[in-house]
Length: 465
Image (cartoon, rainbow, N blue to C red; front, side, top):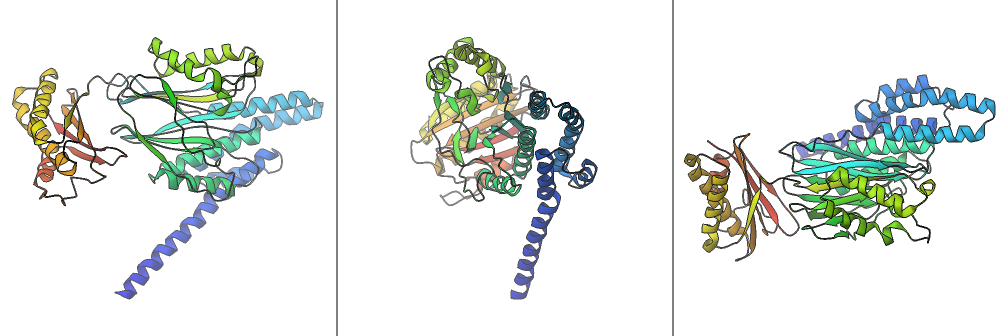
């Protein structure tokens, strides 16, 4: 037995060493060469570097090749400007190229019109006469998870722009592995630090579970986000701010976790937007930012309209457009327009079980579900409620949400309850023999458990037959 364990441990250790070597040879080393190319466009032969970049593979390799293509044409133009001795035009051209590199790799707008979407978001670069390497990014990790990031790299040179895009590629690569956010951020920081140089990235990185509303984020030198709950005022999320990515060799990041409710809104942005000043030297963040966002509620703005409104108000506050720095922002609304979900609040008590039954009956009637399907759906709801009650303290509040998706012929049922992170589908330590959990699994398409800070979520998806 000991020999087998030794062989297993040795095999795992060998795999880890091989992975680290491959990471260095196929990602970090080529990226470091790419940064040297950015620092001096004529210091490395592009043909040789492209041969190396094509061997990287995956997202980093694609990014490296794209950046090389972006550098090819500017190199010749820069040489012509240098030979003409026009230093001002050369510097202006470098800034324009850097801005084009950053802008060309921004994500495509999401389709917010889909009925099944549980969120609406829009990202944008709020333009200014003075350029910097601000960026935003979002991408779908799986069917229920979306990742977002917004940040900037200090400076506006081509080297800064290339580091910005490399940082985006590394963030994407690490988050796509599905690891915990804090661990992924530590590895992202280590990889960017290994690239060397003076660059670092001030970034806010977020992960949203679109089903449960679980929202986790790490602030690595970025700006504090703003949150609007229950159609009230926007408030700052006063959370820890850690070192920027790539600034220090070893940083221990911790993720902040919260749960978004129906209609909650978030506004994420880069620091230069908040640092805009008026004629009196007052900063936009301290003087007008919150009130501008709160005024936007009267317009019932969607995510895209909100970004446009903030841009107009920021320009009016600043007065002089020549002093405005470009900045990046993301506006997100959770469950925007998702009227299909209805909810009720009940107590974790057998006395409140009839309220769950009545709530389900009304939801099914409003959803024009055939009466023959009522009995099964109500029984599933009652069994799920019973599971929650076994794991909650007596009379604790349970939020029940339900939606009839007629086009998909399914019913979504969620229950949010304080169960101390215990999963009723797998933990049978509180007097449950597992029969209710097994019954629910047998008669549904999917069951989901999501641990939360104050409440945990149980969700089932069942067919309407």
